[in-house]
Image (cartoon, rainbow, N blue to C red; front, side, top):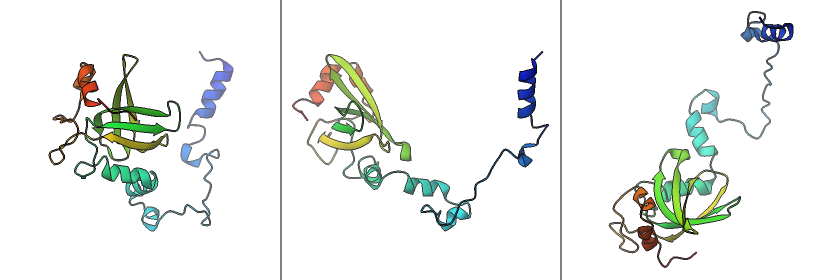
Length: 177
């Protein structure tokens, strides 16, 4: 059996005492039309919320990265096996490594970099639209069918490099950034 303070709390949270739609506790604050973030006309009709979020959430620079570096068929896309340096807004401030994989999910697009630091393998996953991500610098591109520079990679996910660090060092040989 519940003691009296718990019984009173349960009664206050119950919808039997006050039905939810008619609760006096819920307050709806009207939005004034003078605010700077007035929604567009289709949003007022309840249409296009996801398209609105895709256009307004990421910065233009990050949208450019999504449309060029992380697109499937763009000529300047980044292929797995490329060596990148990522600048961050928090510690560690920079991280360099071999691109193991790209996970394309629209605004949730992410990529994994791997490096060997003090004979220990370190992998970091970065989200392209994260506010912590400041800059992506390409140190060496992986070879594609059209460009022959850089190491030739035949896979899309390079997780096999976790087991063979000598192959990974061969990919990033001579690159210091």
